[in-house]
Length: 147
Image (cartoon, rainbow, N blue to C red; front, side, top):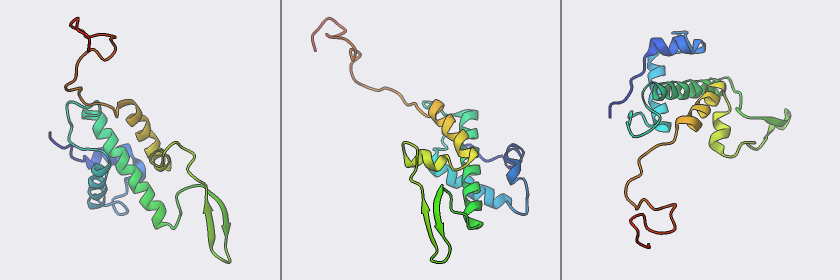
């Protein structure tokens, strides 16, 4: 399947926080978009529910999420919930992730990740059922035979 390329002008219009060309050059956007493809398969597979415009939006949201987190790290901010900090001994304690999984916690660190998580929960399932017999919910074989 064909990969969806990044439309940089549409990305900058959709996410104004990354519209500055000098802070976020095109090459940087392309690099983070390629990284987003490591988290979300960019193959536009017709057998998955996440394809077409929804896949393009998911990849752009993941790119924005990665850019946002990289910006936090560049500023020296630790993403997460700090519950205690000590300046003299340089000690910081972070709260454990309150979500069900580390993946959900990581996506909830930015508004872009939260949108992406919502899309993935709605559209992120898919695939085809191949093989097996159709009597999964029957007490005997579909064709009148006992299993």
